[in-house]
Image: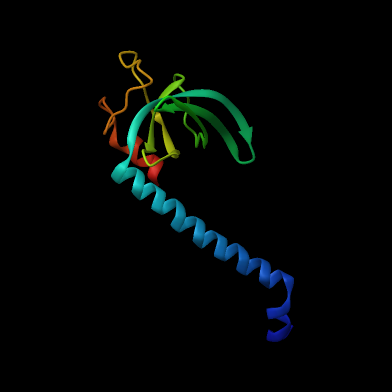
Length: 134
């Protein structure tokens, strides 16, 4: 196959589209992670359900910001759920952007789903926090 035929082939165009999409997705999610780390607030999120997906298990969780319910999904990535309540970090400017810390369960002493914090209000292992941003 000569170079001109390669440039005109649908396979080549498909490969280029996947590469461009991957680069855009990388920078988009990396930017969201940086914003979460810099400006994020923490809430208590509740696991609604777990379900199988291609490649593993996932969960759907909900949390409330200013009285409005937000529902998001997250891969379990091998995490074993210990409870139904975990800390969620979200962007105050766009509460749909969030991550749930499945290795940092909420203690029974924290029950107010409406309260938010600038940092997780309990002691935890830093590697459990960092795991969500890898």
